[in-house]
Image (cartoon, rainbow, N blue to C red):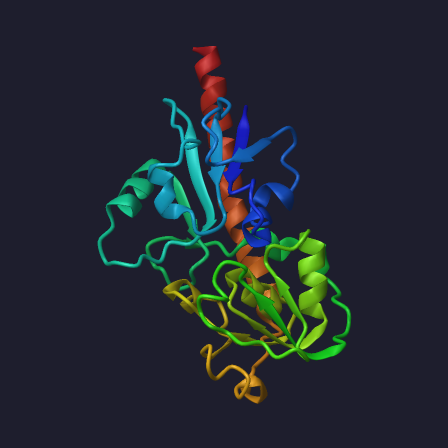
Length: 261
């Protein structure tokens, strides 16, 4: 049986690059590719995500569906900008199982970003800075966020997940306008301030302190930590993986029946 994963795998955004369950579990001989590539190999089970790609599942070149194949979305952002979206409706039709990273979206199973399974969250080092800013490379300038020189800064266009997480762990308080920056800071039990630019920041399993481009420095003393976040989202991830495994087993049984008939 052929298992194939797709997400935004050719990208400078380390959050998008690091959000596929392909990288955190043993899938035997499964394959992986960028969801925008048209030369998707034939598969029996296709797993899409994570990341904010759900609307794109109706149009990305890599999304295929041959007869009998099973499609699964895992850890995707499902919160819509508008109440009715043709793209999201089409995406739902293409999927057999949807796991949403947006806690509280009752339409789907809760499946937080599977990067929570990274070993880097097992024993993060002690912080060495009072505050650090993990910045979204494409949004920070447009949001007119002024970061004073005494606060260390790293963007989400860094070299590796390890670099991103080591930087986030170095802050006693982490300020971020990156979805994954906020998520990873919460997983490490750091005091976390979120400076949002869209509604995708409203659905973390446990909330950060929300602020604005103008007030985040004054809000640093108000930042809250959510140390139980890591275990909660890891448990939810394993619960969703159980459902995925059941779908994979069912696909294998159907293939076996087909060969015998």
